[in-house]
Image (cartoon, rainbow, N blue to C red; front, side, top):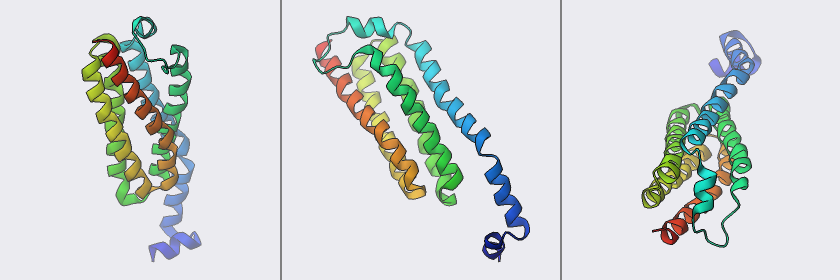
Length: 176
């Protein structure tokens, strides 16, 4: 009965789905604020990161420090939009586990910068970024079941974190 009312636009189901369609912007803004909040806290925790990065022995393939800001700016937007899509279009029974994994990877993302740049604990930061990579992959897996386009938005993030994991390992080995 509910599905029929929803398809025809009749009854309470129509009002609820209309209300849900009318409120996407505030939710997206909250998710963007959460992801960019992590970026801001990371930036504060890693103040002086350019100097630290410049002082390290780096592998020949290490990117220049100026590249990290633009890459993360785009990735944080995709992380927020992916969560927004799962909330808006994802399978209802998978929204909660998807958002739990999303939150876990965001917290792990937050933890890496102070370990690496502030504490200079490159080995511990490597262990932490391995956990981050695993959490991002788990998030993608759950998002793929909930709403596949959202999972696809996280693939560049996973690739970047995999690259950053390799870079972290190299820096740890070059800077004992």
